[in-house]
Image (cartoon, rainbow, N blue to C red; front, top):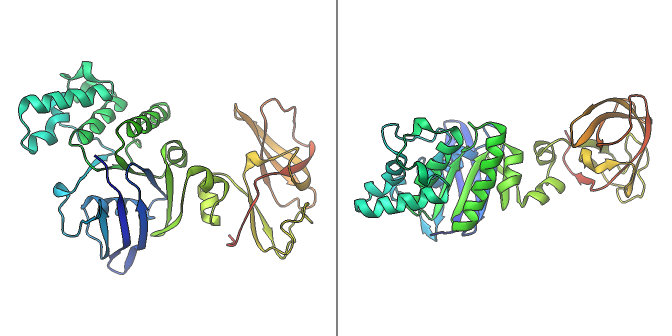
Length: 339
């Protein structure tokens, strides 16, 4: 089962604080959406409103064209996977997965069969009779996912589901989550503050800031074409070069597509190198570090020594502090807001 989700002017106010400011968002059936943003941006509040754990001060949530106003969480076509898994320690994995079906009055044989099907999907069928304490964190997360999907929700809500896992397990689960979502076609709405996680799994990233949507787009567009300086900075390292009527601290930028422009020119570190359509000019390496896939260098432009550029040099670059390199750039984006 799957369904679209429509958020219409969703507003949430707590006392004199507004947590959400009239959120409008359309989520297609079968889409994997990630709500991304810093702590306090409103992403978890929005997820709780979709799931029915909080009622909006104003606005409406529609799932499959049906308004959820006044519909309790248990009666919504949604289930939620939490960061702490919330597995029953005294139950076997199969019984944990079948718990929601049991609450819905499904017969024992049918719910056992469904539980085994879900455990098979997450690769844990052979452990069906074990208890949660015998599993790793990644395995417990898989059980929580299987339990949520066993009741065949139209929309699966995931609240920081990978936050408790170490880096290697988190990356493995990112791949598995996306593969499972593609296989079953259920609409997924996933909350995280991890930019890499969002880019790894999302069909579309919804970047939130201070209770508003800053940008909603596929990962490539959000990263390469940020809609604001906040999005540019939040989505990873970025070099910021101020422009006023086309003038920058580096002097004239060639070619002149940014002439007469005012704003902040944003360039990712990997988009600066020894070739490219935009000339930044000579710069001196002040320090560098080897990061495996690249060399991360801090560089001071000769025309503006107080401006530091972060540049990802090739892995095999023979570079040392003090070296001077003429820098070029690609994929430069001018945004209107300033720091």
